[in-house]
Length: 120
Image (cartoon, rainbow, N blue to C red; front, side, top):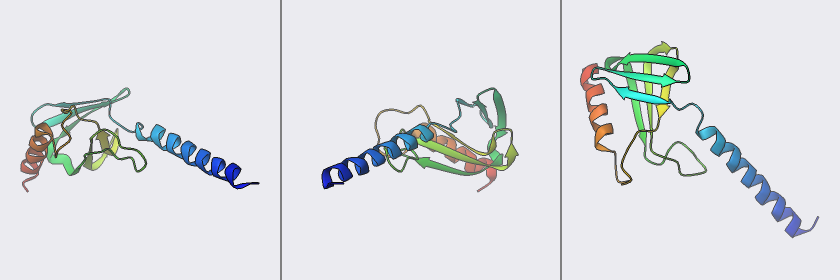
């Protein structure tokens, strides 16, 4: 096998890996998340969940998504006190502006209210 064939195979393997990873990035996201004041209403497929802000133990904001190979949309990850019908954590893509500098004001407000509800 000559070098150009080897290089093409390596590039093809990398490209396939990126495509497979990109396909997995969209999996696991909630379909809808509604802010209802003291709780969130979350829908993923046919399952729905109503979770109090005080029951959210951890929250993370990923400005460029969770992908390690490609930049993705901003992503929020919420972890819950206990197992729910949607698992012990959920990820969603918030509706934000196209300005990618820092956290969006809505996300900042949500995180602040979660901390207040938990008493931290």
